Length: 397
Image (cartoon, rainbow, N blue to C red; front, top):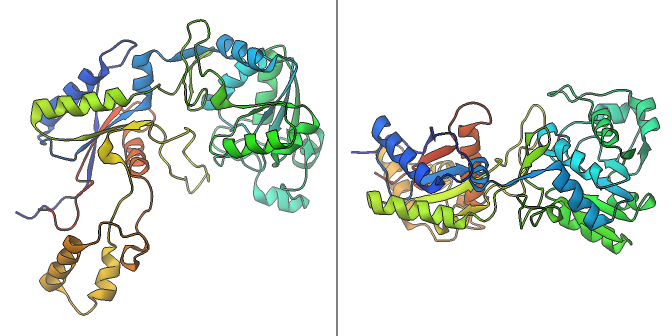
């Protein structure tokens, strides 16, 4: 019988995960119970996606703001630290900023404008145009910013992040000076000790500052890379990918979870005879069309996956074939022609016109984005997502 359904993404409900839980067993049991109750079968090349949050929780990967402050002070030696290009987020950065302030005597907070790296709005482009300000050539003091633009709040959160971040720093007994600029080297006019808080551009930012004379130049990925007094840590990403846990602690991005995804894959094979793929996912890589916010505040969509999820899709564009190569066909004849072309397609379609318009992104980025949208970020209670049919094409029965 011809299959009438393509890709299906299901949120899988799981128990609340705590530190020390056997996460591999919980995930496998939850998937198999869901399959039984919902009437679907495990198939080869299905994908089990697990949110990074429950992985980090099972690992007990937490740190306090005191831990952050101690690590910052050890690595910078106190004094004045430039904190540049942070994202505007209460969940992602504010709690880290409290810890950073505990490790410094003064912070020069340099904010990019009109938006942060992931698109959160400090100002609008229209506001800049009205005042005739070029954000890529002009550096603004806090006084200039207020005289030009007054108080601005984030359209979604209603927070004035300039005041919010400044108050957080002062409340930790640390002096603060706020600057608005988009070129990293501007911070060296205030201090030679710099903490780069950008995510996806961090390597370039650090390279530019070191070349320009920065004496101590570190990124968020260099803080909390080892345990501080028994705290959690992340070897690869440090504070990047962390989230607020409590008012004085954060949950870090999970440490190496390759064994976890491989264990789940192996156990599913033993129990069902089916070879599934498994991945851990964080933020999806997509942009909100209204707020212009790019979702990806994690350093990567997927910190771990099984081997079958490496690479990018190798797909033909059906509408291209239908409109061009087989524009004179219709009905069953068209279906058969397209099916044969898919069966005969090259193993590498990069640069071929018949693949034009297909998505040249990593499989883990695509599936991770699908999983993130499926699980949501609220109270759905589905931290595991089960994806079927992702690797099917028009010819699969």
